[in-house]
Length: 588
Image (cartoon, rainbow, N blue to C red):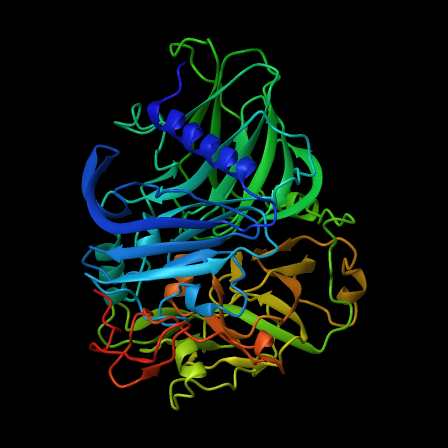
């Protein structure tokens, strides 16, 4: 089957991009410029048409290509009715939280009719990351890939593929997502689950009106291909497989791994996984398929999304074969897969695991319910870390920290829960109230942190994918049940643990991570299930400046979206500028 036009264009631009690298000087970092216009566009899926928020009219949005060492400037202009901010998920943004993107954490959002240029360097990273809206539930449609190639002259530490394709897993609602969320919040309940998942914005032929909305990847027999897989879904961990074909995992979250072969991968919201596949099966058509993993009594969109792996020369009339996906509640497959992930830990790409820990943190992850007189059951479902439900501020926390604005947040987030209990015992359905506040954890520059995230059986146990902004971390241990500080650390992997930016806390279990706080600023940490983030399952670290200017937060750019009148904003290159405009915390 001939490649579709957008596939040809993708190959053309990618080829031009690689060619420009070949011609450029190895010593000269390039500047990559992109224009993102946030616009509403009518899009049809599953026999339903609706207006969605897009970037440049595209769903998913455009790919940002860069090379390790490049400077990237993305000018975002907002023509939609919603305020917007863009997060560059997994980019470390050294000393430069101003380009990080989460609304009310490192910036106030870009209001309708306004622009902001995200200006950042790609330092010490290469591989697949992604970008997405970081306000409301707008990342349901506002997302895209980031492809970072190695420095010029450096090859992948695995067999060079003949071609590559991005596989972005998402979700689709037939109704307007923001309307559904607002209605659910008024009732104190979760919104309905999505109507389908998508691969590159398309649900595939198993859904009504969707034969034309099917992504297809053409391959040639005997050749090897790199798949850059991104889970952009809002609320579901996903199993992914290709009928008849093995996959070799070579990278997670833009960090190379020890290669291993598998029939199925598990990928949580926020995570990326690069795999090699070889077109070594009888030439035919094969489904690529994904469906949720959920081993707790929680409703999910459990339908199967498909795309097609199409061998060149095979007619479209050949029916694709379907892969055998694990059962949605197959915990054993999920745990076995995650246990196989290891950092490459080669001389060129070492795993610099912190061996000495300066500060031990223990955070419980739980659901809850707080009184709500206007809600359906008199309560509002909520979520918390160490029994604290995070309340979104009305001014960016990084601005408040940088300019020493008093009264915006406290730095008394507790290192451990207020009351120890049997975290994963019988379900607890009483005393579910949580404490509300904007409480951050202050940590010293260049200290080493060990954080144990412990799931709890408050209402129910559930898997939680946690994303830490501003840092990668090493996943040194994980287990089912309650973390045992006297026994479990002896089993930690301190040699080649997986390094990533988003990790799943297993259902009714725990995960231990270690990281070095070498990046000053205010850095968000939250569950990447959008429902739980909305309910307050989030916090932030304030990393203090080091001793020198090179270890301190850089001044904010002159076009940083303002929060309210009266703050003097230092700029990087020009004179100081007074921020003008009314408070920007109104979200729609």
